[in-house]
Length: 85
Image (cartoon, rainbow, N blue to C red; front, side, top):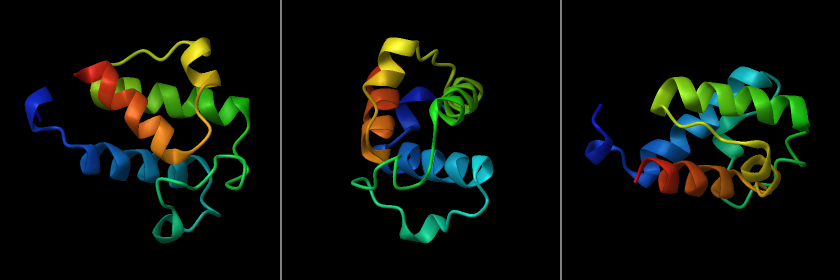
């Protein structure tokens, strides 16, 4: 997949898939862009794991400052979208 072919929807779906990989108790079909990471019971270690998965998927390195800005699933997808643009 080239960078140009990556859509916001594809990034969001990959973030959701990663969240479910990290926490299999989460029902991915209920996640929306407005879903908070707190409501998904994701802690700082889960965020680091999410960042590693996104690095593998898209080649983006998300630093601790960037991770600290993520509140919702949509925030995560938007941040990754900005990084690969």
